[in-house]
Image 1 (cartoon, rainbow, N blue to C red):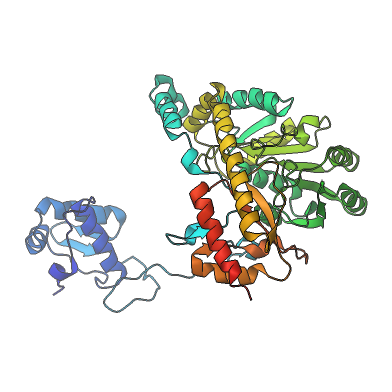
Image 2 (cartoon, rainbow, N blue to C red; image 1 turned 90 degrees about the vertical axis):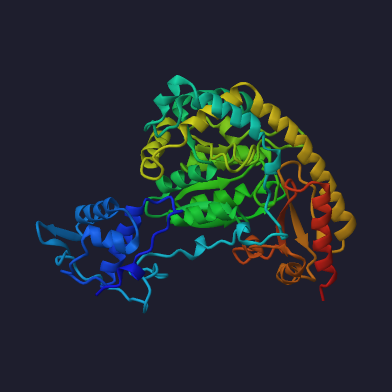
Length: 491
């Protein structure tokens, strides 16, 4: 006799209906062979008495099992475990149901360059050195939520609840065309823009089309790590050029262009990532001329255009492009908050069209209601007001943070005060290494993640990128205190 009373358990506080609870338990018993093929199940009346549920619950359970094919019902005879179910080949733990396997039973490729250590893995009370992130506490949440709620309740909003265009919401595209033409000096139409879920998606789509199976891309000796990984994932072969106080060395780019079939050059010209230097006007023009002469794309990642403190922002390369060589990616994620995945890719129409086709198989579409919300947010001037507000705050934080570092850690660190952005490029005294600092700093709950990624291509900068925008004055003092405590223990 099978002990159904002990095998079957009812949780009346669960949101799951009772008959589904029983159905799932019966399935587990059949899979584990505790109920072998052809086993006759108790009548609905007998089982309802055994486990204390209404007979209709058992009837519903048996009907569900029958519909799924786990049991068969024979008139005037009863309900039996289906004998045609194959034996599931797996290991069973004694007196327990199997748990999900930790390792896959199939082959797949693993890319070591995709391994990252993200700050979410650190515990409460820890601080970590970020590479320049915004302060989410400054996000105009109420204003955005009000707009989202207002748009969601409009009658015509149901038109956007289904599948839409892979290019992104047309209203946001129109608003961004006007906004980017006005603020960045672009000369684009709606045919030149694709809405993405952040600039990272734009880089992914572009790189998949640029390299196909292989191809060369030029990047800085020190470069944005996620961009490098994106290009490698697309089978791009990285060629590195030096970065000095004027940005990417375009003379080196020209030398490589004569030798290799270059598909693209990746650049963050406004403030190079990670060193924060600005690409000079001479090199900008030189790079544009090279792209025309050698037929390669310039993938321009303008990740922090909105944050400039010492002078007016320098117009992007895309504003000077008349030959169709620049692919321009950006987003509102850095400006407002990372959670709002709204970005854009700007390029010639034929390339945008192809990106839109590919996007269908990566992420069918974005959040149309959120895109409508940001269309309103930009159109009514709220984005511009937010930028003006936080730029003043971040400038003050930059000044305070840099002054703290200079006064407290000048013996250990050297850096140039950045003209914009949300981070500094700090070089450690050559007597020490970030490896040693990182190990000591962990005692003070200060995490220095992935410091090695800044020293690549056999070049030892002994420098890392340190974000300041995330910290108010009290937090900046705490941060510097922890870092100073670690530095004082250096041998």
